Structures are given as structure tokens and as C-alpha cells.
Length: 522
Image (cartoon, rainbow, N blue to C red; front, top):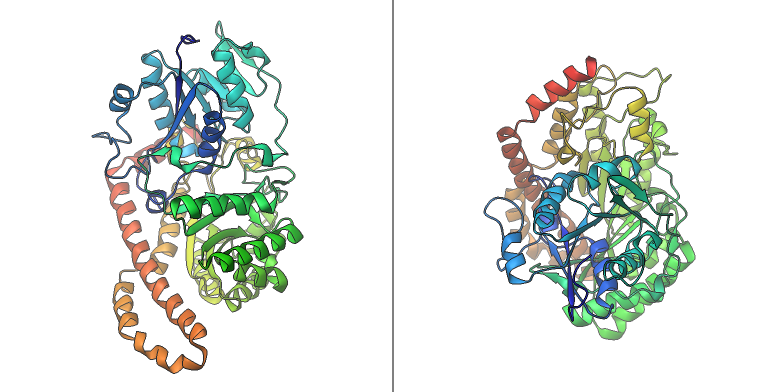
């Protein structure tokens, strides 16, 4: 508890910094996580509470940066002391940093609260012994308000559903909280609560949950949705108050509710026409939605220009293990269908996915690399992201690999390596862990190359050639822009990969991997 006689209290929610430079570092400087903003917006409605969000991955030049890592929390606490600290544990790779921040504030007598996908049952004890006073399990908008009221002495803490805490050294887990279904009653996400950030790409959402039941994913359950009107309201508010033009709809699968999705797209199209502004929207969507021309047409008219698609693998045996009911050859034709509608297609892949017991399949690293490269070329993907399988806490993939005694101990390879760039388990034969990591870099290295800087220049000089498309200037612009944009992005990707490689060489991961493999065999 804290001094409840104060006139006002302050909650600070911190999004911990990534442990090292990675493929997400660049985009993180232009946006922030939606979850902490939603929780902060809920608290901001409480009487007597001030709230702020600090995203350590997005601190502009005015942000109080530490000389070593992340934000300068000593300065923040001197400048604006808080009564309660909240921590976002949505990314497992940031958990060590999260614990570091928690201990800093706890040593100063500040109450610490954490929540996010990482904190499933197996990790509760770890968190409560690492500087966390209270864990919020599940969605946080309602739980955080009740917990803060309990800390003010207005209710019993054990009556707050969906939390875990220590009581005389004993872990107390209160009953689970029911999932939210009425999102329209929640306040709109208020991005002005994010201090020091420079946000140009705004995350918004309508649907929580996903019914695809992928083995490697933590997002499960029947999709629950807000109304299309609410999502449009959020977008229009951000445009009118922040002059926002670029949006990322964070729904795991855009179009899960087809009719409502089309209705939203039509509403967004009409809104843009009424205000005379054109927006740029990116979504995550299933590959098979390419077979729905009405949906795709509505999306394009709404300003949805980019789609992120989880192709996962061009190898049919791996697709089956992931529960992806599609053939590689069909994926190519479906990807091209998105292109025909004018979408920029970002392909997401997992290299070296472990197969289940009883499947007799072996493929060398070189053959896998060849399959990936050929698929990416034939599908004509605009950008790609190739990661390694991550046995995240709470997933069926982790449970399966642990039963097979294949997961490297977190004492040897800590949570900070759980970002998809490092091998975390013994792969299927004949692959080795080192080959998996090298193969991922080879595929990305073939796609993102230095030579594209010259192509950027060539495209600038070729701009006058659009005169040949005067009969259809829109089509000509689209062809020119896609090629120019892809060359620029691929050169930028080369810079990112070069930075990651430089950081990797300075690190000690090879030694940690060698130790982990030795312990696993013993």
C-alpha cells in the first residue's frame, strides 16, 4: 500500500527496451505497443490518478536516455515521482530488462505491477521473485483499475480477479477474469500519454483473439470484436488530433469477420472521401483471403496498401506440423493474387520448424535455403522476414519440445534471446543449431543487399518515363513506386542486417550456445 491521503497519484507504465539491435529496432522508433496505451487510457479516467507511458524503444531527442541502456529512470523518478510502476511483458526477449527496471523501482519503495503474454503459469514464481509485486494475468484494462483501488485501500486485493502476488512467501493466484467482450465501453487509446515518443505509425485494433490455433502462437481463443464504428472513431480521432496518416491494424488476422470487415472498409473509404485525405493502412491477413475479390477490393478502396502474411514455410512437411492447411504451390498463386490487386506483400517465415515424432523427413540446410529463395522469388514478395522458431512460454510448441528434451535451458540461453534471431533448441537432423542461424541470415542476406542503393538512384532518373503512362497515370505510378520503394527498403534492410551482425560478433552467444548444447546432452 502507499499513502492514500495524497490528492493525486501517478502510475508510470514502461515498455522495456529490446535487449539488442534487431530487425524490429527501426520500426520501434516510429510506433509503440498498443496494449500499454490501452491500459494507461483506462487508468487516466480514474479520479485522482495521473498516468504516463515510457517506451524505451522510442525515445526522441528529448527523452531521458540512460548512458548505458534504455531510459534514465533515476532522472524520471526525480522529475516526476510515481507511486506505482507498471511494466509491459508482451515480448519475452525484453523480460530481463523488465526485471532490471522492476528491481530499481522496488528498491526505492515503489509498488511494481507487470502484465503481458510472457507471464503464464510457469513464469509466475520467477516474476514475483524478480522485483514484481503484482502480476496481471490476461487483459488489463479492468484489472488494473481494481488493483489500484485495492492499493488505495478501497477494496481487498484478494477480491481482484486475474492477479498473482506473494503473501508471506506464498503465491496467491486469484480467480481468472472473464475476457472482455464489450470493447465499446473502454476509452479510446490516448497516445498523448506516451511521453517523449515520436510516433508516425499508429497501432489500432478491433478484434482480439484468433481461432487458427497455431502450435507456435500464444494468441488463442474465439475472436472478440469491437464495432467497426469504434475502430473508425479511433482512426479519425488520431487523424484530427495528431495528423496521423499511417496506421497498423494489429488484429492477428484482418478479415476474420468478413461482412463486418467489408463494412469497416467501406466506412473508412467514405470517411477519407468526405475529408479529402488519403490514409495508408497496413494489416495482417490470411493468405487464403486472396480468394475473396470483394474483400480485397474493399480493402484497396479503404487505403489498405500493405499486407503482412504468415507464409511460415515453403516446405509442406513443416506446414503440416504448424497446422497450416495449404500447399506451397498454392501459396505462390495466392500471393500473386494480392499483387494483382496492388498490395505490397510482406512475407513472414519460420526457418527450421521442428517436426513431430514419427515423421520421417530430413532436409539439408542448403536445400532448405534453396527452397526458401525460390519461393520468395516466385511469389514476388516485396519484403520478407525470416526468423527461427521460438518456443515461447505457454505454447504447445514449447511443451512438445520440452517433452522431447530439446529446449536449451534459460539459465544458459536467457529470455533476452527469444526474439527469433537465435536457435533455442536442438533442431531436426541433419540441421545443427549453428546452421539454422546461419541459414536464416543467408536467406535474408540474399534479399536485402547493398546493391539496391544504386537501383534507388536509377529509379529516380527513370521517373520521367511515367509520361508513357499518361493514358493510365495511376497504374504507371504504382509500377514505378513499388519498384523504387522496394529498392529503398531492401537497402535499408541491408543496413539493419549489417548492424545486427556487428552486434552479434561483439556478443557471447556462441559460447552460451556451446554450453547449452553440452548441458542438454548431459
